[in-house]
Every structure is written in structure tokens, then in C-alpha cells.
Image (cartoon, rainbow, N blue to C red; front, side, top):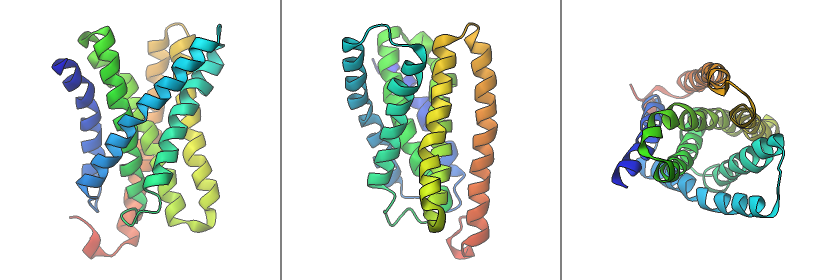
Length: 223
């Protein structure tokens, strides 16, 4: 069990450290940890809902499973908890903060989901889980956080960016699930898809970081 816990949580912590260390204006560790734990806790109600759906329904189409019962539920819960706990928080005061806190929620979710999977299926799947599900949650968190940061910094377009912050990760997550569930040779296609999402997410991460460097006073920026 200790091995599964360590292998399940370590990739998420590594991704979180990468995102945190890229931040020029360091966020409180306690608040990031709180968001990480929040992300982990929302695994439980989502699993309960998904279990109930599968108990009641048979022969669910792959598209419905991939987009509605998985991607929609998971990304909506992440987005909702961000809006409920962080969006109006005093510490959420620059663009990159959206990426930090959304990634913390997303990676907290990925870590507990990963632990449950490894406990059920074996530690030998740890490297593959880190490479695909955990990294995908990190990417969806970065993208969600980027647009949440845009919404906070650009009140005029708040509605547009808040909508994009949910819809885009939801659609990308749905495509990821569909490839995983419905296509042959899914590893090759999934790898190509995730490579594209990596490029998009890292570009957004760099853009948010550059925005903060340009528009915030030097005294607030970590050298």
C-alpha cells in the first residue's frame, strides 16, 4: 500500500513543483496544499455518481461515456471548486495564479485517482499512469487556470473566459477519453494528441508568466 501511495502521488507532486517553481510571484504553500487536497476529495463524489450511472444504465455509448459521464463531471467539479474557493480569494491577484491553483486542484484529483487505480491493478502500471492520466490532468489544469486567470485580470471579458476555462478542458478531456476507449492503436494516437496539448498548454503557461512580468511592479516579482 505504501508503494502504491508513493507511486500514485509522486508524479502529481512533481508536476505541481514544476508549475510552482515557474511562478515569479510565489503563492502560499498552505493554500496550494488546500487546493490539492480539495482536488483529491472531489474524486469520491464523482466516483459515487459514476458508479450510480453505470449501475442504472447498460450499453452506454462510448461518446457519452467519454464526454458526459467522465470529462464533463470531472472538469465541472474542478472548475466549480476553483470558483467557489479561490476565484474571489485575495491571493488570486495575477494571471499565473490561475494556473497554480487550477493545477493544484487537477493534480490533487489525479493523485487520488491514481492511487486507487494502482491499488486495484498493481504498481507495475505506475509509469504509464504518470505518463498519460496524470500528465493529462496537469495539462487540463494549466489550460483551465490560464483562462481563469484571464477572467480575473480582464473583467470586461469575464464571462467569455470563465466559459472557455470550463469548455476547453472539458472538450480536450473528452477527446482524450474517446481515444482511450474507442480507438485501436490508441497509444500512438493518444501520444500524438497529448504532445499537441503539451505544446498548447506550455505556450499558455509562458504567456501567463510573461503577462505578470510585464504588468506587475518589480518589487512583487521573484528573481
